[in-house]
Amino acid sequence: MINVAIIGYGNIGRAAEQAVLVSPDMNLVGIFHHTEIEQVIAHHHEIDVALLCVPTREVETNAKRLLQVGISTVDSFDIHGNIWNLHESLCPVAKANKTVSIIACGWDPGTDSVIRCLIQAMTPVDGVTYTNFGPGRSMGHSVVARSKQGVRDALSMTLPLGEGRHGRHVYVELEQGANLEQVRTDILSDDYFRFDPTEVEAVPSVKEIDTLMHGVKIERVGISGNTKEQQMAFTMRINNPALTGQVMTCAARATQRLCPGAYVLPEVPPMWLLSGTDEDNIRHLV
Image (tube, rainbow, N blue to C red; front, side):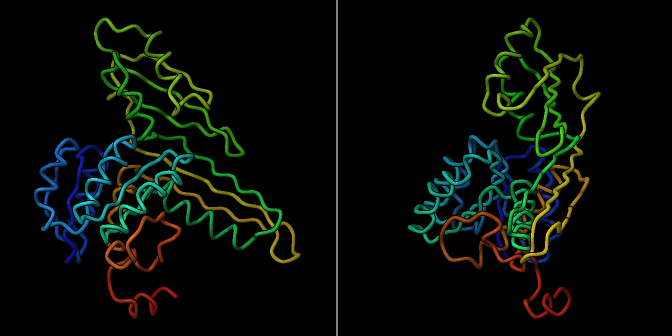
């Protein structure tokens, strides 16, 4: 049995708990608030892997501390442009302490990253891939908007504009006396939002309009050998935290088979995400 701890108990943490509890090869050791890293460290001999269900900007520091005491980690870091830097930062720490860190491991980045790798391998020449998200709730963007001073709650919706471009509509429930224009300025100047067209709107209650649904459509046109116009697409509509928690839980399984180091999901053999023996999975899936 793989002994798993969950750190952070928001939407993704609760979803991860459900996924761990139904996994036949996992034992849930404990659930910790994201500020309780010291308690996790104190129990490091009882924990094989920790699921970091924490805000992206807390991932690197927390992962390093856990890796240093021998706990492997899985996170859903979601700033695409900074993933390689995180990989380079955590890899030597994991290797030095004989642990594994699987980073950026949700559905995007994560399983969608694997799909993009596969379809590019299938059509490697002169191809173009578009990833169109939504419409739906971005967990990471909502967390960032909610962190701004004067914001009681927030919902950030991702709106597909086509050809891999996205807009964002942020609904904010303000604290009493908060200034909407200052909140709007703080949100629009954050790196999570400043590269996309973004609207910020105040609403009486975020809960009345909230949703956990999201989706993606990945499309590619390319050439296989010298055969042009090979077209492929992948589409899904999902509950965002449920799928993120499930993918992280599957990745926890893979940490027990990988050599020490840091990995993104495309570097992980897909079969190592599954329970059961390799023989059974090959017989049923290949």
